[in-house]
Amino acid sequence: MIVAELKRAHETRQEAARAAQKKWKAYSKARDEMFARTSHPAAPWKIVRADKKKPARLELIRDLLSGFRYKEKSKKLDSADRDIVFPWSPADKDRVER
Image (cartoon, rainbow, N blue to C red; front, side, top):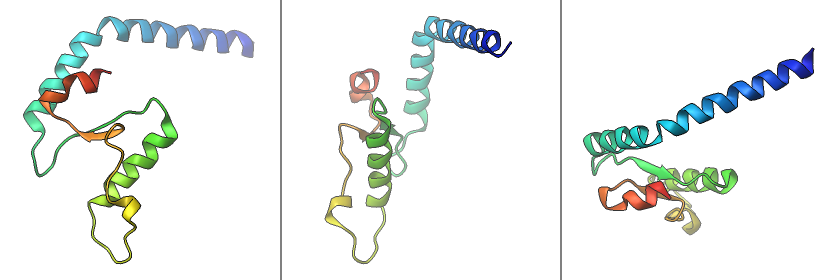
């Protein structure tokens, strides 16, 4: 019984993934429009490359911490790896899609 339920859950996830893939271009267009309309120099959208989860999380934390001033701030936290975390820009569209 449990094996059958797991197989069905897996099939359901695969069906959802296939349906999402069919809408990828529309999703990407809507995302780019949202970024263009709502990103602002004082509050830009940040893109996080999350192909490798742990480095992505650590670099996002580093990026967030770099925006604060506090005593004994480490130089390591001055900025995140810009190949992993970077502000959205219409000029960087290819970087977002990568």
